[in-house]
Length: 409
Image (cartoon, rainbow, N blue to C red; front, side, top):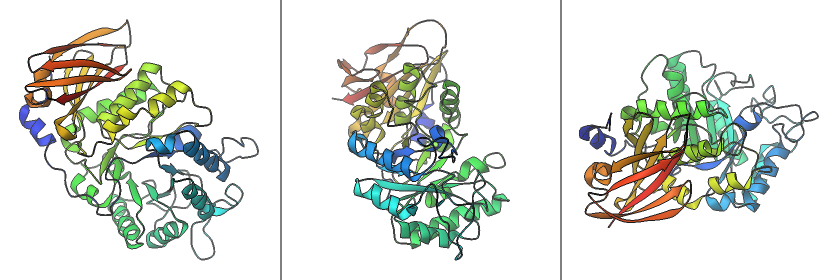
């Protein structure tokens, strides 16, 4: 095997995370649905009545989340992204929803969502305009936080377009965090602060975690294997600075789940679900729940995968070795268990086997003196009891991942 994580680095990755934003939410990675990747900024409801960003879209998704097992699986946040707002603020300077597309306003939508046992998320921007050109929150942080709280909003995705300078960017993210907390309403605060910092300077993740519940580091996800692959590789390359900071109340966000759309093969969909679980990622689907396949639904609602993602220990996983086109990842879980992912990056040929010693996991502690091994993905089956000196041989499809759970005995 090549490129193993040194013992000292692994110990650093397992060190206690920094103090998180103290607002009582996101103790495990938030789960829900977000419109952006699938529905973008569609605003012409006459031409695209079932695809435009509108009250109808979100009430229909709320109905599906409540009726089709999504809420019960843990997906509780129904989130509006950009393009919901009217082009201008009202006469009192407050944000308002586009009256044609959201005739009942956001508060009525929040009531509808809450009545189905769900929570509502909304979007704004640290600058004077959102990324799509709608009114941003610059100069209105306190007012907008109060407005969102009065509507019954439970999550704010706060983008970083049009901020003007790095100083104003940082000031805006801090001020909105304080303003949200001041409302007294528990509101998950989703930031893109480090993504907008990174081209110019290294983010201070200790500070970011004190203000944000989760934060984006990398480019928007696309409905493609190249996008998923690049996110996973970026995470591995930067794991020494980002893994140790994640934990209850604050999470690295690799962006939306695109499972159930058009761009991923089955094996690639399994890889996204498995790796997002290993990375302790927020799980926000962006798909059409009204037209999702049974296979995609099974994968997204898989209880064993979600249990790994939501593990209360709150440790993010990391890559421990890369051997040619194979990658071996592990994530510490509660009860001295480990989740293990074997990812096969090759995009030609057929399935190949990857062998590794169980003594390699958890700094030698994951299977000491013995352990039970269970395969979670791409299908669920027991692999039996193994000893510390055992080796496993895992067959993986090209661009696929095998996800295992290892429990010490």
